[in-house]
Length: 325
Image 1 (cartoon, rainbow, N blue to C red):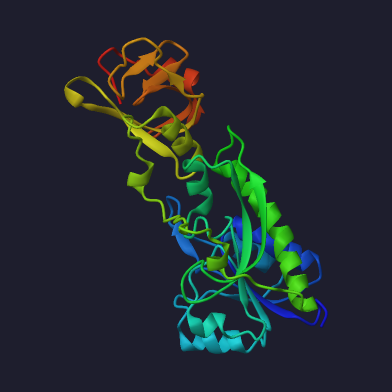
Image 2: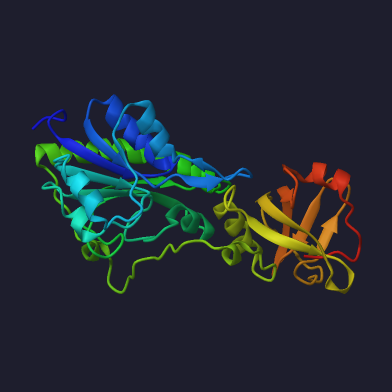
């Protein structure tokens, strides 16, 4: 079998998946159809917006399926009509068994972590938030439980001390596309030797979860150690972004800000530790007290405003002595 003979159906939604899809198309692989999320209303006008994957597919004349329900019989029959031998899934919904068991060569997923570490919806965020110094990408065959299938290939990369989730996302997107093509080629050649994930765990080790991130996940608790908050902010930047509330006298809410970047944690040293959330500011710099040190805020966004450097924020917003986070 050649790459032109192998019929592929590609499942994906965001730009992370587009890199792999474009590499398949440019490489001459036979992408028979694309499955993506239905168009969703967005923006002030609530106009329907296409997913990144759909925009690419339409521009390249690829058939597009957008089922509301993946268990819908009409969708399953239409999917079956393409007679694809392989399904590829990247940043998409959980597939029902009737779908992932359909192709004779199986269904594989590209996941942005070194499985079994960080199973779940937000693997890149959690790796950075937890202060990891390494992450990577994995291809694996789908099975019933999410992100638990047998591993086909893995590749690791470092997480830089000052890198945020966007930096790692973009690097893994390219690495992942390379590995998707390598995985397809190995499947065509019949050289794939999948490894069960439980064999990759050392004695006593447990898989690491990477659950979906909610608004409360992003709220900064200034009583936590400065190092933990430094990693939290990197792991949520630029999206969905860590946030905090600036309070005035009598704990009156003054404004809410998203925090995109901070300086390195600075210990209190021999000086008396201020209360967590204490603000130290002048005309150009703003630092907040954490559980064991200071974090200087370098980039932020005030509610209703655009993202800006802190010195620009301080030119239009006066920090008074009674303010705290």
